[in-house]
Every structure is written in C-alpha cells, then in structure tokens.
Image (cartoon, one colour):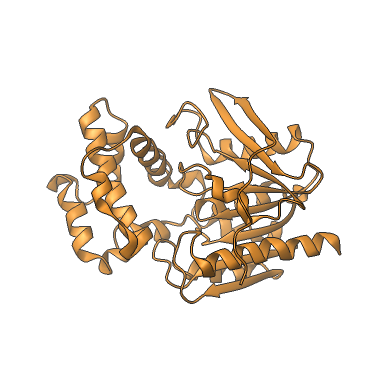
Length: 316
C-alpha cells in the first residue's frame, strides 16, 4: 500500500494579478518534471501543504493554485469577479505564463468539477485527469447535500441546522444564509457561517467531526469560505444544468482515473459512475471504506498510485 511522499517546500511562489484578485500559485518538485496542477475543493477552501505529497517530487512539476478568494489568494473571500469562468480563465493564464504545453489535472470534489470544465474548454492543453469524489454540480447534487438526501442520514443534525434559520426562510435555507453572509451585520455573518460549517463538517467528516471547535469563535476564514461556497451554490455554480455530462464528448479521448469512496456522503458515488459511462478512456476505482476527504490509508494509496501510474503513461 502506498503512502504520501515526504513533505516538500515550494521552489517558486507566484502572485498573479487577475482583475481585482491576486491568485497565489506555488511550484514544487522538479522544474523539468511532468506538469501537474492540483485543484482544491470547496469552492473556497484553498490548498494545504500535504497536497504536494500526492506526487513523486523527483518526477513531477507540481503546481498548486489557490482559487480566487481562497487560501493565500487575495482579497480573501472576495465575490466580485469570482465565477467558474473566471477560475477557468485563471488556469489557462497560469498554464501560459508558466510555459506549459499540456498538464495533468488532479482535483477532488469541486476541484474535480473545475478540472472537467477546464478540460472541456481547453482539451488540447490537457494530458490526462485524476479525479477524486467527482461533483457534477447538478441541482440534484446540491439538493442531496442540502435538503433531500443526506439529511435523512443525519436527521438530528439537519434539524439543528434548520432550526438555526428563521421559520419563514426554512424553505430556502441556502439563500437565507447567503444573504446573511453578504450583508453588513457581522454577527449574522458569523452565525450563518457557523450553521453552515457545523452541517458541512458533520457530513464531510462523520464520526471524526468535532463541533466544539466552532463553539467559541467563528474565524474570518470560516466566514469567507462559507461565503464563497454559497456564492457558487446559489448561482448554480455558474454552469448550465447537467452541463458537465453533456460536454463529455469534448474530452472523451483523454485518459482519466476516477477515484470515489463508497462511503462518501457529500458526493455520492453515482456521480463518478455517471461520468465514467460518458468517458470511454476512464477507469473507475471505488474504495469500499473511504469517505469524501483525501485522507486515510485507502484514499492516500489510491491517489498516490494514480499519480504514479500517470507517470508511466507519460514515459511510455
């Protein structure tokens, strides 16, 4: 069973000026290696140091991008000029500036969404895809997470979530929370962010979730991430309904490895299964004991193995 590669530090850091945003990018590994771009989830979560360690640092040129408003990009939590089209444009700009002909796209959850959309827009610039916990950004996917799906698995947590919202707004809780997060009342912002983070944390982490971290203080980072997540959610992720599956003919030639935990309650495995059926050059690997996050021995083994296998395809 494979584990993460040892931790490494960037050899280059960039701050790219994009409209009203500064997009933070770091490069790790080997400058002459196979270029791979890591796309984080959220939207709005940002990259973490351990994300560098999915890749062999002696053979990969590892590029980590903090999407607009996330991570070390600034202004943190900024919504103006922050749409899916903007993020796709940033990736193509970064590829061009870094003088990369084609790169491997490696993303999970919303990062997988963004990888698919970028690939469909720029198929000639993509060598292959490794996607974890595919999120297709359909209304049924959002409804599963926030209204008519996983709430039946955590009914007590869902009840607490709904009860934190005024009764008159409970039929459309995401719109209400978004209005709070984008309003001027700082206390309302923090209450909305806390409610969203408590619900999301329970679904994502299950028994490993510790809600006590949100009991005392809700940080600006939590507020900003919730603001971006709901910005995308209430706007239908700025893409047409079912647009990803309908656009798969543009990337049907690309090799892809799809990795999905059977116990993923955020993005049910049906999403990767449906995508796999549209991509004839894809492999679907379902992990029986894994959940949503890119952690745990089973998931780490699958992700590192997929990245290593892609190297063999480049060498062949």
